[in-house]
Image 1: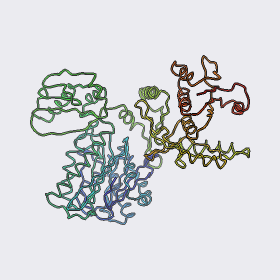
Image 2: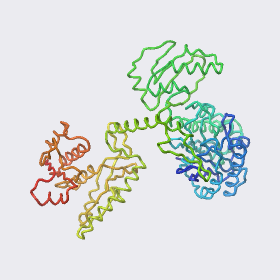
Image 3: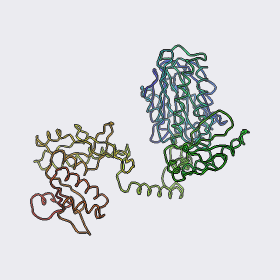
Image 4: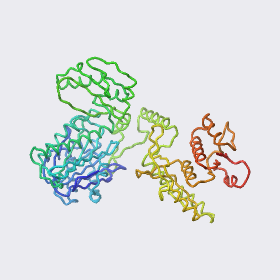
Length: 610
């Protein structure tokens, strides 16, 4: 993502939240024009009260943002804490006090632990770099995704870039949302022109956004412009201001939609409409009822009964209910984004808004949000997240959801990104090392541990199963035979961790049986031995000592082989069809089972021939 010139970003953990980044800094190397838009809630938070009276302005340099504590409804002490934070930032950055703004988001009614922010200021400034990701992470609260956007536009022969970080997902209503955004641009533009462009962008983006019908105490959008692009300063209406305004409008609209996408796919603030969208119910009655309620409150001369309503481009109402294929429309409403279009037949103006379907995730995130917040002895806030603190209804819902996921994946491994990193660490750093140590312990073997990523040994790609995303689970696309043969020719026994490297640069956890099968095929092995935690292939509880590939395929088809053994059996069929002569499945729990297989005629495990 392209960043605006002359800006540095930082995000660290200051201890406001127990175990996540919670302090961000956006810093310009040169003075900026600055503008802001703020919540219309009369219960404004202390940072909003401070910034609102100071913008638009010149000579701004920094915005300090904390998450985890809103510094709202905290009285005179809240304003004192804002001043304390500004003073600490100004001192650390060696800039005037007036050049610093602050913003806060999080729990309302708890005093801001300003001392923690002050103590963290040296580390925060030391973390500054031309990368906005850490700052975007540090301002998150109930968000489920990091929000970043960038646009570049030509103005006066110069490339001007706008970079935006944003947070927000709950308490979002038109006239801003529970959200904080900072737009940093290298455009040269006067404060009054920047303020005008920002106000215009707000009307078309964040003020058109609704998630749950509430309005936060802390909503704010800052725009900082340092002029590093070198364009002629924009001061008056004209093509340059129009071009800048269009780019600002575009980046703000993307951020507004990103917020809505956190928990949102619908088009209005009505809880009934949200429920209908979540249930894939094209309920035009709820849509028109919500419009009628708003029109009545605002005094708009609108007759909802005269409207036309389409859902996913299917007309469901046109001055009267229309017939439509309910099953087809219901299926289309399961798509990631649902479009509801209402033609009021009362003029030419158009507007669009993004909303949410009031999903289970939203309810779970926010239901017990404040009731579980506790104040720590050092003045911070933490969440007492023990399951015993939640309501019986929540516990039942959690159990049902868990069972649903178990059913959804049918026992198939599903590895999340960060869980995948932990798995890779255990496989390569622990299990692999222990096996190598055991093999080398007798003094004769020359075992060497390798990850599938070493030497490009295993190339992989993301595995999708019946349309299900299994996270960081992958499948083998290529084995580096030359690397393996080099090790074998030197007398080494490679011990391979089943981790592959994708063309996208991601690590993928791969089923060990499949890795073994692909390696056997790649090196032209005559025989493959599997160690398992079962005696072998069973039928009616009895071990099948010998069978052919055709016999194995029959056992799969008739349902004798199921679950994890089915996946293993399929890998066996694959290697046999690729030229491996036989596969022996042994019980790894039995001491010396491999010796028994290699050096005796006794029936050990299951032997499958091509």
